[in-house]
Amino acid sequence: MKIKYLYQLLASHISILVLAFLISGAVFSHFVKDFAYQNKVSELTSYGYRIMGEMEQRPPGDQPIMKPFAEILKSRQISFFLFNEKKEALMTPDHLRPRKLLLKDEEWKELKEGKPIVIKTDLQRFNQEVSVVALPNFVNNEFKGGIMLTAPISGTEEMISQMNQFMLYTAAGVIMLAFLLSWLTSKFHVGRIQKLRDATKKVAAGDYNIHIENRNMDEIGDLGADFNVMAQKLKSSSEEIDRLEKRRRQFITDVSHELKTPLTTISGLVEGLNSQTIPENQQEKCLKLITEETKRLIRLVNENLDYEKIRSNQISLNKLHYPLIEVFEIIKEQLAIQAEEKTIN
Image (cartoon, rainbow, N blue to C red; front, side, top):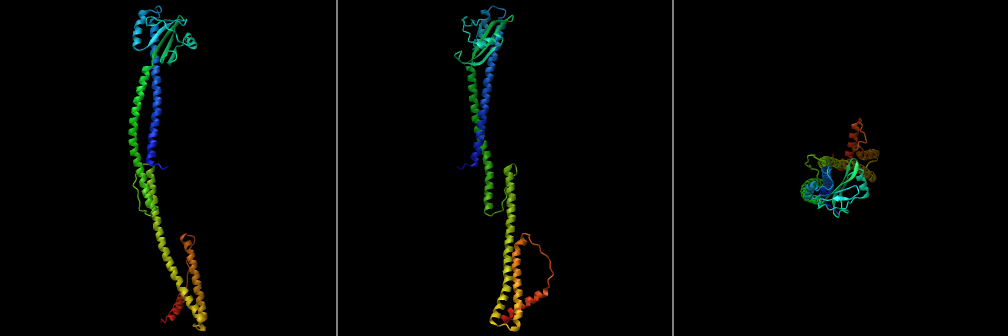
């Protein structure tokens, strides 16, 4: 199936642009999502250390200290509670109701070693997708439990969804604009190629008076310049062929004329000898003349065969001194016989 070059250019441009948008969009979305989760984890960690710092010198579960944090974090949709070294939840800011500490054994082990637990997103343990931070609390280098903070990531997902929607609209607008620009540039280049096609058809038809205007700004321009050089050389070759054809015709005419004269002479002499109209004392002279004319024919034939060699520079010509008196004597004898036959004095 034949597909126009214009459509091929459009398809390649748009497909590359769409692919670039898909890849960049996916990478950017992943980066923003990871950044949002990391930012949420950093926020939870910061609040966790501040709460433990405020409660370091107070008994666990001191509600006057917990209440301000509870109100602030509630507005941020952040839940938290303290736990002791026995994995028991001590309190929550919601009416001091204990909650189960949902930590795996390996996570608890890391906490006891002083390593904070950071979970960017978790769905199974909290029945919703949340970010989780658990921080250990040490008193005199002795593990005394810690604090756990959780925050739902639904707001982050909504933000990423809105961002993706905005990117989709932006990509659609950019693709439409790119399609228009691609159509114009592709149309321009296809038009230049069409000019080359039209010029090629004229050259194929034998018209070599072709010149394509170009500014040599790219490879198509260079192709146009090469085409102009080719057309000029073809024109020169055509003119040379025409000149050679004229010379060939003239040569054939001259050769035909030169061959006709000795053949006429030989024909007349042979006819005279056969009909015995030539006196016996003139027969030897006639035979000599026939021999000379035969040699002349052979020379003309050889010269004709050498014509192509001369044209292709495969033969060299040498100057020779030739006695013209003998030539004139032969011509005189040829014309004398013809004049006698036609009773011309």
